[in-house]
Image (tube, rainbow, N blue to C red; front, top):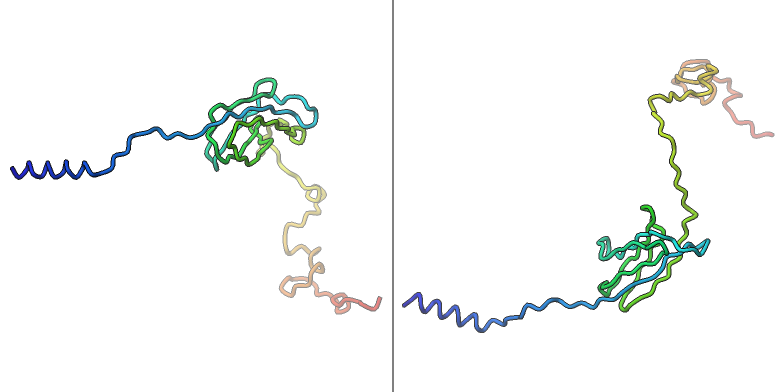
Length: 172
């Protein structure tokens, strides 16, 4: 009988707890479409990657077609950073507030970046030489006599400069 009372009490308490129905969270979404063109030539810039980032988190992304057109359906409304990239290089970056369907026409500059493939070299094979070393004029020791009068230091062996060499002549 005692167990019955506990069960009835628990059921009665549960009846007073407000129950919320499991509703799917509804968030406004918009369509974003547009075109990417080359700023210098005005021609379409094909196959660019378009990304909508919330801080550093990718929310939506797409790839332009061969005519530079792109479209993102069902992008949640909000603030985003728009990035346009081509071959891994960011060509355009802009913070946007998107709260309604948008048509974006973006002009990018691609001429300022030149990608060049350089031949591979092995550092171990290339021994750098110094021209002074080839002429046997390279200074390799602090005791080299050519440094004796360069800067007077009492602890460096060698002849001491004459008193008139150590002073600056300001009379000229």
